[in-house]
Image 1 (tube, one colour):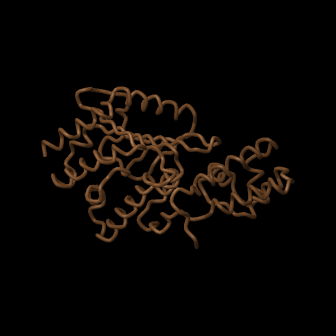
Image 2: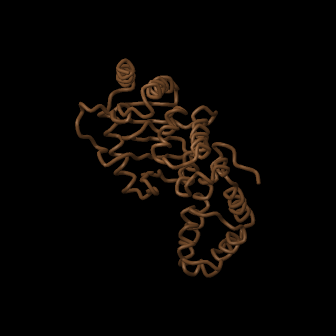
Image 3: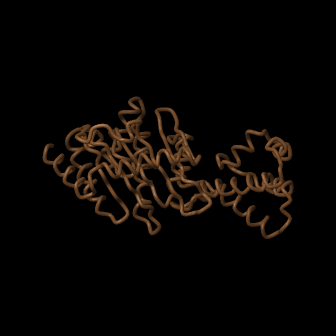
Length: 288
């Protein structure tokens, strides 16, 4: 089976198709229960389809379009083609043995995002980690994992970073708590390499890096790390990603997104400027 190349966004296609199907269903006044009956599925399955959380069967999409009164052949074919494209496995499919299902959704969203804003408290963000730093982080969280699995995870993380250098690279705006830079992950040499790498990537035109220093005190994001993803497609809402040890939350309700966006805006105002951040990181380097 052909794999989706980096940046092509089958996850986003699923979300787009799901939102179109939800709009058509609501316009016709059809309940989720009735829609599920037509395709021999539960009401919750229709909900997951409309949220783009599961893959689509072309036959089910065709049956739903008939139920919703979509008779125009061009409109039907456009949506059926979207269903076919949405089922193309992402490049990360080859890492499915080491990639939790809940994180596969994030990788797909990250691939399609035009803007990624992230706040990190414990670690350097994955998109900005060096191989040695990423390896040390994975070993901390997976002490019993075999070396081959750790290396696969590191390879996956490095592959994700390729998006930052592609022709349609997203803009990455990262705010790091000072704690993430002070914590000696992997030892002095690993941290030296990581800090030097941050200085290098901060000079990329599509990367903005800021540090929230200890001396500022309490701030707007004391609740923990989070990311906000924005997509080029105008029909897609922003998505907030909040990770924990065994899963993640994906928030796209306007009120939830607004709350996190306000916290992010406050963080960016209160943190050191990009130039000031380089001075801070340089100071940390001199201390190692």
